[in-house]
Every structure is written in C-alpha cells, then in structure tokens.
Image (cartoon, rainbow, N blue to C red; front, side, top):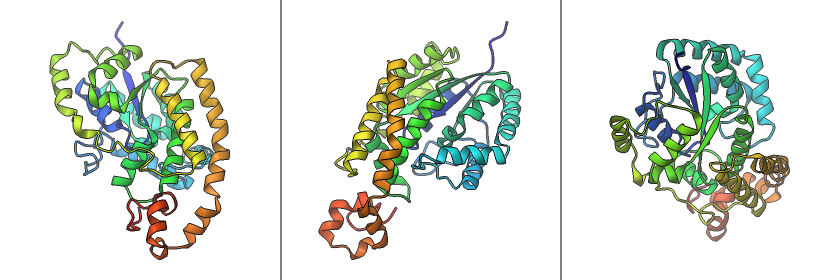
Length: 322
C-alpha cells in the first residue's frame, strides 16, 4: 500500500520564521505551489507563499473587515461569517485538490492561513491527503520589534495584542490536526534538531536526516545571522496587563514542543477566556484615546520618547509613524 499524499500547513504569526521553516521543508521535496509571492527586503530568500493562497485570504479578510494580525476577539467570528458568504470552503477545496493531483506532497504557508485553518484541514481530508501542522513560535517582543522594523501600520499595543489573539486562536484551531511546534531560536541556531524531531512526530518520512543532499541545501539556506531583531520588553513598552498576558501566553507556547498535553491546553483555555477583558482594557484606555486625537509631533520630546511606541505606534523618538 502506497503512503498517503501529505499536506503540511506552516502556521504562526508574521515575522516568526514561517518562511524560513517552509524553505527548509521544500529542500526535502515538499512542493510550494506556484506562482509564489515575490521576495523583498523583509524576506530576501523569498516568502515561500503561493500567490493564489495569499490573494484568496486577503479577499476574504477584506470582506470581513479584518486585518492580518487583528487584535479584536470578534475578528474570528467576522472571518467565519465572510468565509461562509464567500464559499471559502469550496474554493479552497477545489484549489488544493488540483494542486495535490499535480504535485503530490505539499507545504502551504501564509500568515493569514490561521484564520482559515479548519477550512484547509477539511479540504485536505476531501482531497484524500493526510494533513499535519507545523507552528513557529517566537517571543512576542521579538515579533513586535521585527514587525515594527519592516512593516508600517499599527502601534506596539496593537502588534502585541494581535500576536496574543492570533497565537491563542492558532493553538485552539490546530488541536484536531497532528501538529508540532518549532521555536524560532532553535531553528536559526541548529535547524536540523527541531525539524527532524517535528518530522518524526508527524510521520513525515520525506524529511530524512540521511538525505545528505537535502541537508546540505538546508544548511546553505539557513542564515544564523537572521536572529537580528532580538527585541525585549525594554524595546517594546506596552501596558502592564498586556505584557503580563503576553508573557503567560509565551510561557504556554514555549512549553508546547515538549508538553502538548491536557495541562498545557487547560492553560491556553484560561488565557483565551482572559484575553477579551485585557484587550478591552488596553484598547479603551483614556491615554490611547487621547493620543489618537493628538498628533505625536505636537507632544513634548521627553514625553514622546517615553511612550511613543505604546501610544502613537512609532518606532523611534522622531514620531515617524508605522
């Protein structure tokens, strides 16, 4: 009996190393359907994202009025409703089935995929494939710092809140799928150990440590200097309740590679129940409302330097917006 065709979904927040992981997987024969999103300075080796997947996800998110890293708890419901209205399930299934027939084993990656993960899982089953999920993990301050360095739009509070919302949702929606987790720092420092461990846990025989040619290609692909945005909370000033919840969320995520068990999942359930209250508190704070009505340029320099990133979404003390 022949082995089933495999579809590996790579999930995680933007700037968490998903492109890097997908690039490694393709060196072992997993196919990224083309055409692909063009590379840029934020991902010089490419994003490894199918253009159709990105365009399709963006269309549904626009219809839902939801951002890629939306911090609102209600965003999940808005995406679900827009997906039903846009027949997202049928379109995903049609596209994925055609790709499987043409290419066999696939790896599908897009930071927006987590909003639609259940639909992609159902499509994999309908296409007669065995699906698995690999999720990248990176600390929230590093993600927020990296996003501020490369992307415009949103302040640090929104970026950290969005990270919490997306990662808590990702953990929940992937529970019914065989899954594994890879820490960004582990991937950059020594990619082979976490990747081969994850492949073994998920039963991906094509990710073979004895494939010397693929290992050499992956070695050449990984750049250890990529860990260049190791920001800390000192660089990412956010309100204390949000920081505390982000720390607790990261602690639970950091435990997943070795402890994806009932106890860890119960902690995620607790954090998900708490998040809407913390989000409402920081999103509706008087300081943020006032700051949004006042251009950063008119605020005294000393004040702007101390709270710029938290209130106005600036990356430096100059008041430059993102």
